[in-house]
Amino acid sequence: MRITSGIFKSRIIKAPAGIRPTLDNVRKAIFDILGGAAEGAKALDLFAGSGALGLEALSRGAASCTFVDNSRSSVKAIKENIEALKPGRTEVIYADSSAAIQGFARGSDRFDIIFMDPPYYKEIAKKTLSLLAGCDILSETGVAVIEHSKHDLLPDSSGGLRLFRIARYGDTLVSFYCKGQTK
Image 1 (cartoon, one colour):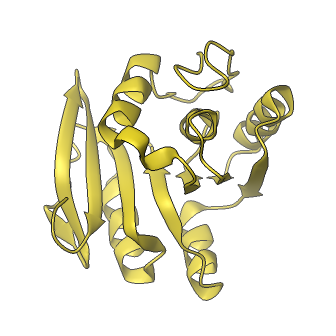
Image 2 (cartoon, one colour):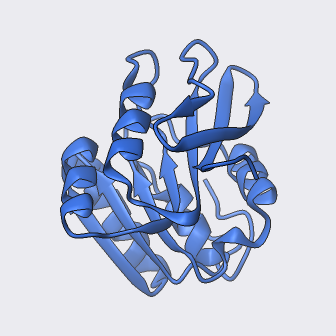
Image 3 (cartoon, one colour):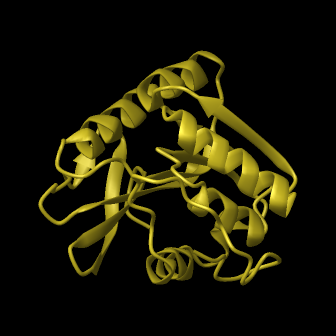
């Protein structure tokens, strides 16, 4: 895998065994849809795996990124990728994404972009979306980007979050949510 654009363009990202990383073309398409939203953003990469989405955001000008994963091998890979790229303000958290979301809410943390790429076929995307809406950790103008299987359909809205775009890449869907009215 490689970073697709920005200051780290073409740099290689290592992925731990046993994960389904976001393909380069899907990552590029996500950021094309987001436009300049990454510039200066505070990003959160949940179910981070290799950290590819958060690292891509940092390459495209995000101010900071917090990576969360509950796999030791993923956390190790993310730390190695950060060490290789030296992207600036990062934090890596070894935790379950649900517990991390609740912790961010208790600390009044807010993020401008939240990436989620949970395991497919377990309704985790839907449950985590609901938790995100309830914990209110997305900034007022922020975007939640959720990669999921076409078989794991997500609702048009969840709490205060509203679906404003879906993109399809083979069997993968990427759903984009914002607060309130659609963008």
